[in-house]
Length: 179
Image 1 (cartoon, helix red, strand yellow):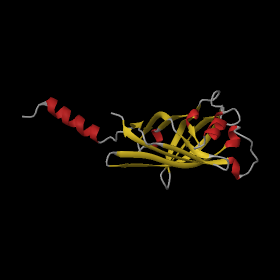
Image 2: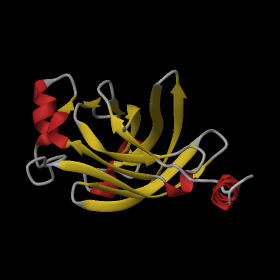
Image 3: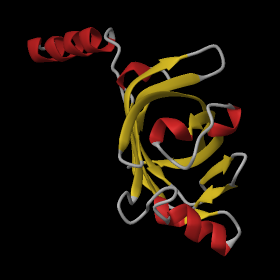
Image 4: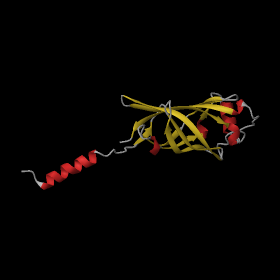
């Protein structure tokens, strides 16, 4: 004879299994990331990245990106250029020590995803959109994106209103699932 409590638990399990649960994954940024930039006047990378990422590729609507780049970690490969880039002529790293991006939305696209959010750079906040892909294979996961930033929008250096005001940015961020 089946007890009422057993029937109750079986019915509860069936009801719960009919719902789709949203599981968002917290990701830890791991070593091996790269933030490269390439413009008319300088190219190189930033060597320090930190932040938090919450992302589920099956449910991008609830994703959150909050990442910070240390401006003083700029590396152009030339010490004099690094010093110039950190000065008040460009990034003014002493006054504005970080580049900060906080997402407001993430949507799926034909080629992957697009994150929209506020980029704070050189004391100026501007909404930008960054297309990216997310790959997860055999325990290895990573985000990859390419986009352009108009340095004139952020009052960095002298601008002329031409294509040379834009800097291409390429970001590769390997991550591990937070346990």
